[in-house]
Image: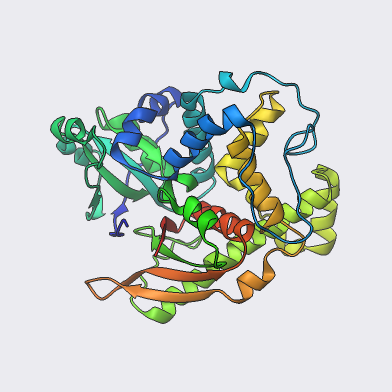
Length: 368
């Protein structure tokens, strides 16, 4: 599991064109040669499920909901285009674009994957207050040799979206990708949940280095109580997003009805996005169906998980009420990760993983 190391960057404000960001984006094969994540699982199952057109069964509550209807994820009538036209490369491009859209909504640093052939050139782009970076180990795949031999260095950097765009423009041959939700989930995690028969599983969570809150205060959790407070805030944020998602589903995604419900019944949630809109795989699937493109059943699987899990009427309340947080100390004596003991059904656990992965303070999710 990846370990977090703090990095704070201070860069002059500037803007870059969309083409600069596109030029600085890692290709899908190159990303997969550097890191193994749940993206590999998603792409593999997108290909295999395309042939069967069936969904893995999620164990959930008694009133199970299926979103895989002829009307699509959000109730619109679908205009079917061959799903094969939606390639893995297009999906990767949409995923990275979603990541940029999400981080640009934030005014504090979050995690980016940065790769460069020339680290001297890369560091010339940075004005460091504290330079401490986490270098990623070479991939264990067969392509790890070429990754190692071409002198490419890859790091997880904590910086604002503006600073990341500056690096993409200024550092020659630098490749920059927002560390978007599904990339934080380690490979095999969802399969482990689906195969687990005990309804009890422990998740290991690493926090993003150099975390900032909305008031620009640096979180430096040196104590177990501070980390537990941070974990509680993360869980509360995920819970609030899921509440909004349930309201949207109950109001049939009618924008006016949703706004009315939030304004009059849940004013504290008016500015909170829904989990479905925030999590990349459900957002991309919804966008594609709006465009008339039939998406893979694997993307619909995630929406089924939300509909029967955190965004259901019950909202997995029993699971949330019984979560157990265990702070984890690193070798330096600081608390920068924690484990979560989660007891619930598949839909609740999978949707909870999706929700956690969207949080900007979280870097990695694995099975403990």
